[in-house]
Image 1 (cartoon, rainbow, N blue to C red):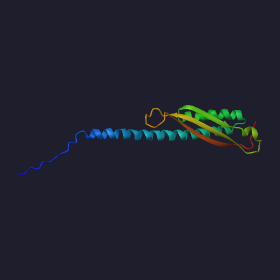
Image 2 (cartoon, helix red, strand yellow):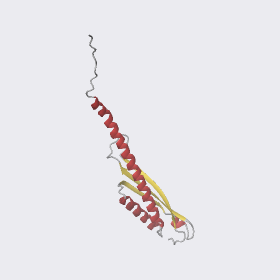
Image 3 (cartoon, rainbow, N blue to C red):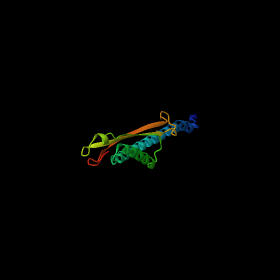
Image 4 (cartoon, one colour):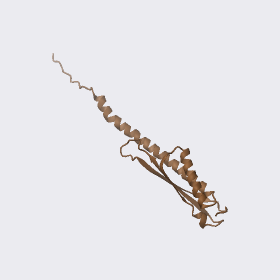
Length: 147
């Protein structure tokens, strides 16, 4: 009687190899999802802050008070939404307060730039911070007195 020898492969250690390959890929994937979510949330918050700032500036009577109101509104909006900016820059174009007379259509434009911190993600190819920017325009009341 001939005995057939069966050659069994030894599969000990294969789970460790699978984990060594799979876990870093999974961690990278999760890190990229968090990066995308954090960036999208920050972009939405910066757009909302720019809209709030443009609206706040548009109801003021002077270009100086419009600039101050826009900066305050953008800062407050981002703070209320829990978006910590490393650098915040609010640029207000309120020149049409000066160059237009009552009865003439005019707008005020606000650009908000916020640098968000991404250094805690530790994902390769993801920068330590990212600049998020949004610009919004709001009409100035046509028949409101301007200084």
